[in-house]
Amino acid sequence: MSAIVLLVIGLSAFLTGVLIYSRFIAGKVFKLDPDFVTPAHEFRDGVDYVPTNKHVLFGHHFTSVAGAAPIVGPAIAVIWGWLPAFLWVVLGTVFAGAVHDFSALWISNRHKGRSIGTLTESILGQRARVLFLLIIFFLLLMVNAVFAVIIANLFMANPGAVVPVWGSLVVALIVGFLIYRTGTGILIPSLGALATLYVLIWFGQDMPFTLPDFIGFGPTEAQMAAAGGDAAVAGEA
Image (cartoon, rainbow, N blue to C red; front, side, top):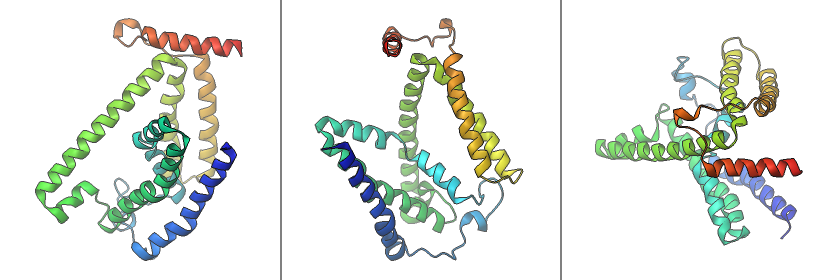
């Protein structure tokens, strides 16, 4: 099947989910109230409870959901062909992933911004809360370990990625300062941040950053071979 056809089908499914299915869940299941005062406003303290622009919230959530399951899942499903991976991404997003995240946010907002782990105590008891938090802790530990290995391998195989990755942290702090401390609008800092990140990518390729081998973070032979192969392909191109 043509990739264009799959793209049209996928985008149509997402659009239908946003315009129809999400409204059904919001109105019939969760019964959202536009006049509801969220914990960010009710308990506003400038630290843990901070009213945030909806576009910023969307950006936070968009990056947060790009975790191991959405990335690894389709990669594994594609072993059995393009159809399982396509169904995983489209149907899994509309009927599972999006609904799960929507539900978690709704529950948290209705209970003073508490996390699911702490909320478990009032529903199932103290023992369930401890067990649930332990499960969350070990799951996050494993996920962080996997991503740490991935980023470490990226840095060793492509030292040019070090500057843009670390630079993005500084850019994020500056954008946050401009928006929340100086009252600057979102558009200008966002465009400036985007341009800065592109500059950092270009700068990182010209100024790759590597650590001395005696520290113990030198690239392995396999990583060097992979990096050399990529460089050779780029040179031929």
